[in-house]
Length: 407
Length: 54
View 1 (spheres, rainbow over the protein chains, first blue to last red):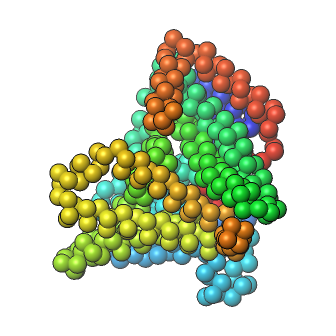
View 2: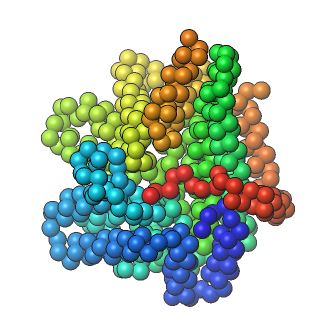
View 3: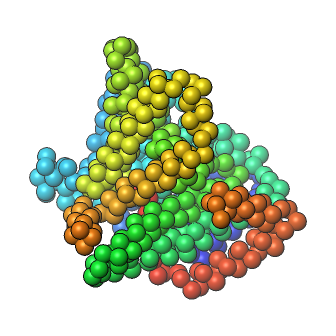
């Protein structure tokens, strides 16, 4: 089911009325489970993908039950490795072609939301191991993993937040004004997704085509700038529009989702950008990649921990980039962001060492430095988005072509 | 006009629109705009979510 459709609006209105028609806990849980099932039925077309999804949910639930029943220190390593292995295999990462025969990678399975479900599962494995996971059963786990508010493209919800909702689902209500505000957010999100993102994508396509045909340097630069800015606009409107729609939809059923965007193109450095862009992913990477690896390093090499921290920041953001897709272009996207974040940290530490705390405060408060920082970060991010569409060769040809037309 | 001032003005306008006294009418108009868009654009692409986690 496409979000930008009458079907989705009717589905949401019917669900809202049925949900608030009764305050019975059982009724609301059954209704939400059915809604998730209907949404998934409309997404999956072939039976093999359905079976793969069923196996993923059942096996992952079994892993969690095993961990809960039988305490063993090695479980997290075994299960996280298994989850990542399944993710890499199912997404058919291009580097696997260097390691595995083509026949093994020729499967046709495509599980919608597999990346997000894997992240949620790893979060549950780690939190369960640390004794921080609230109680779960199959119904709560399946609805957490397959909730239509987040299965498609996040936000990456934490189980603790879902448990609070699931446990008190019968107490969820709201005023008419709150419902109107949630609906308003759904509508705004769909307009962003269906209109603004669509226009930005068309501009990008048009500019890319014209850039290839442009004869003089002025025309080439003009069309290049248009495509350079249009694609980041498309990605932003598309993804933040989707997030607004699902956060608003969840709000209509009394569920609070974490915000996923906070005006990211006004960030003053790359670190700030990732605190404003796909926030739930950044927090996941921070907690389960950066902090976990930093703790491990600090316990072994305390004296070098600060310097190794730069490397770990690079690795964390590189992995965040690679997670976006299975093709080589996302490795370059991750590389650009990893370098940017590590450089931001090095620069920040150098500033503190040279200027001192008071000096850094003055530096940050300077409006001209802020403007230059925001503009610089924005253009760095726009450059990284040149590598977002699949096909590294296409992007490199584009850059070579720009050089030859201008030089 | 400076970008900061423009942003501030947009925020003020959004706040003005979202005032409880105007909210009902504002949301109705937005919903009608969305319905018109759905009628005009549905199925023409651009609506698929780029970040779908396949």
